[in-house]
Length: 220
Image 1: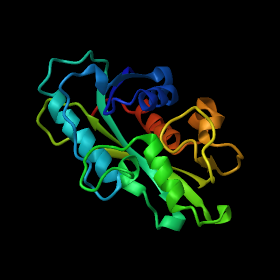
Image 2: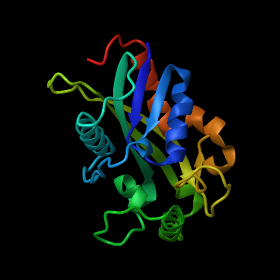
Image 3: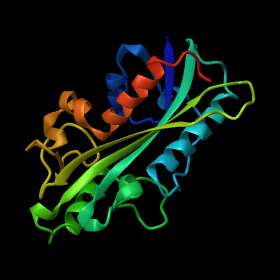
Image 4: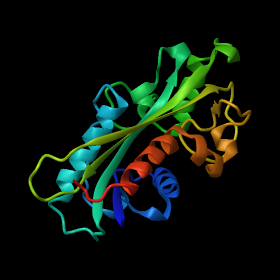
């Protein structure tokens, strides 16, 4: 089956990562290809809630735009993911991308600022107590025009690890230079895309998604 996913992100690294895991079985379109696409306030209290907000909002907007190049099925895909640190009671959590942003700001902080704030918060926490995990929720909505309420499907993934005392590696993005997954002694930013795409929180959720859509006959 030919499947097209419109990914609700302009982040090239994230889009490339999603496309790599889904492989040739899907065509992936970046939000950067759609001028005027709305920004969605991610104000839900869970990763799944934010992913659903983005997917449904973008699907409604796309229905008012010129028709997309269609295969047999077209879906909107949105994800929300973040880092949970046990010593910080699960923070930064759903605020991972804007962890270091000013109070009340709707914009994201830079990766460097977020990493610095995290290291500062953990300054007195010994390395043995720095357990953490990345979580990812992926929401998928069929792009339908029949007026029916679409079914939102959510796929989850997690990757356990720890936060090291200083960043290492130059690949990846976000908290990758600080996060060392269980079973490894290098950060995601050192391990690189091939290994990350095998074990990451996002790849786990995407593999569940791929297993689903490969066996799905239509976008109903």
